[in-house]
Structures are given as C-alpha cells and as structure tokens.
Length: 447
Image 1 (cartoon, rainbow, N blue to C red):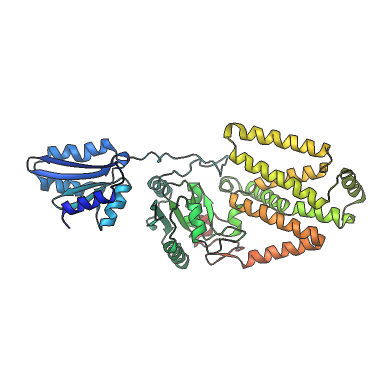
Image 2: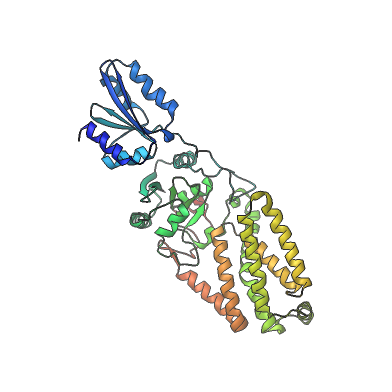
C-alpha cells in the first residue's frame, strides 16, 4: 500500500475526531508527513527532535538515518499498529513510503506517588505511579538483576491498555507463568482499567472467599515478590500491581517487618494474628456463650454480662448483627466521604451511635466494647483484600453459631481451615508456610 493510500486509510479511521493532525513538511527536495493527535503530543520534543533537524539536514536520506537512530524510534509491523500507537500518543513519520513511529507523547500521570494504602513508619514511602513506564523504571531501579524479564499484552477492546508481566527468569515457576499467560490471553473484556479488575478476570476462583493474588502499591514489596519467584502484573494507568502465586501468610506480612529487629517483628506478627482471631471469632463467641452456654464464663463475669443486657429487647444474635451492620456502614462512609470530613464524621458518628444505642437499651455496653475491639482488630491486617475476606467469614460464623451454638462455631472454624487447606493460588498451596523461592531469606516472604 502506498503512503497516499495509507494516509487516506488513517484519516478514515479517525474521521470522528478533530484531534488528528496531518502536517506536510517540504524543503529543498525533502518531503515528510507527520501524523499525530495534538492533545497527546509533546510539542517541544516534536520541534526539537523532528521539525528543526528536518530543516537543518541536507538530504532526505540523512534525515531518514537520523530518525531511525533516535531512542524514541520503533518500527511499524502492521496498519493496525499504526492506529493503536497514534492513539497512544506516538507520532507517525512517513519518509519515502517508509513508516516510522516516534514516542514523543506528553505524560501528565508519571508523577511518583507516596504510599496511601500500605503505610509504614520505617522504610521507603515510595509508591507506584499511574504511568506504566515510570513504574517499570522504579522496579528496575530497585531490582538489579539481568534475569528480570518483562512481557507486554494489550487488553481491553475499547481502551486498549498495555499490561506488563514482570518476573525473574531464574526464579519464576514456569507452570505459574504459563498459566498466567494463557488466562491473560483469554481476557476479552471491553474495558480494562486496573490490575484489580484484571485480577478478577484471570482468576479461575473468582467466587472464592479469599484472594489468590496479592495487590500492592509498594515497589519494595514488588521487589521482594520478584525475588521470591512470583509473577507481577501491571496495567498502564493504574498505581497498583498484583502478584501471584501467594499464600495466606503473605497477607499477614507487612514490609515494615523487614526494618525491625527479629524480636520486634515477631511481637508485631503475634499482634496481627491475635487481631485476626479476635476479629474472626469474638462476635460469634459472644453469641454462642450468651445464648447457649453462659456457664462457660466465671460466675462474676456471667452476672456482669447478664446485667449489661438487662432491658435489651433483642437476642444476642440480633444485637451483634445490628452493631456490626452499623460498624460496616461507618467503615464504608469513611471511604466515600471527602477526606476533610471523613475522619471527624465517622469518629463523631461512632461515639454518638455507641452512646445512644446503650442509653436506648438497644445493645449492651459489652456489645459496644466487642464491636470496637473487632473493628480495631480488623485494621491490623496489613492487606485490605484479606481484611474484606475476614469480614465476610465473620458473618458466616455468626450465623452458624446462632443456630448450633459453640459446637457450630468450632465446626465452622474447622470447615474454614479445611477450605484453606484445599485452596491454592496458581498451583501453590494456600497454607504453605513459605512461597516458592530458591533463596527464602532473600525473598523476604517468611511467614
């Protein structure tokens, strides 16, 4: 196809937009055609890299060689690639029926963020950016291994976002990598905007109660995951990554554990697991003991619990559900409200709600203490996806306990353990103590 026919075809593809610019440059028997979208192009680079050298060089052949030597240069493989790269912000240069693409797009989303979700006191406060190239630069700057490999896919029939698969060739499990590749190729959704959305599409256990991929915004956690033989996925335009395979204990590990001494890290992990069990079992335990087996308590404690429930018209099951429901509403409101008022509104709302509920005898004082302890315990889980799972499982255990008592709670807990034992993440046992790595100490993913 001649350059004239190609230009007509490209203009036909962009007939519904007025952003496409076609610029013809002619000077002393030299002629080139530039095609680009003006809102995506860096005009300063366009002037310095293309237009100015075009008028300064003597021959068209000299300019041709110059363009191919630019670091922004990439070859054209198909007509479809031309349209896709132009929409991505690249500029098409046509010289003597030869087609060249130059990446001189303007980027307004390449600023590096600070950690917002996985905050720590010690260690790096650097988070990922919304720009894929910037994120790859951050990862390569912190992982100095020649075996680090990156593969690219384009996903989303409408937005056509670039997806990067990152792994260490020497440490990754080939079966896990092949499985992720195959699942990624099968994704045929219209729009892909984030790695978390992609996680749901490539996960064959999307209805599982527990996540099979870990989501992180921290480059240091990505580096530890790569060193542990995991595969990391990044989507252009999203400041979060997902890594697989994972085990349960990955979700209970904070990056700050690597910056403390062994004893302090151990103490913090004990706190997290204590918070996990409190958040999971305490409400159901309250229902089972107060409704079925109050003799489990010492006499003084049983009388205290019974005294606090004097005047409460509901059973302990309804009482727990009532308070947990409003706690979940407060948590959701804290996310949806503007930052300037969210902390104040939820704190004041929680205090007013707790006081009013006890004064109206709709719930006991002990129930308010338990709900507060459960809320605090939920927040000590380092990764939000696991915290969401625990919140759902907690409700299931409460329902079972309300029917079968403490025996139902014990049985439900054993069923949960059995479920976790039989669960896997891309072939990796979910309750395995360590993730796959040739060097466990270097992976930093110890339970």
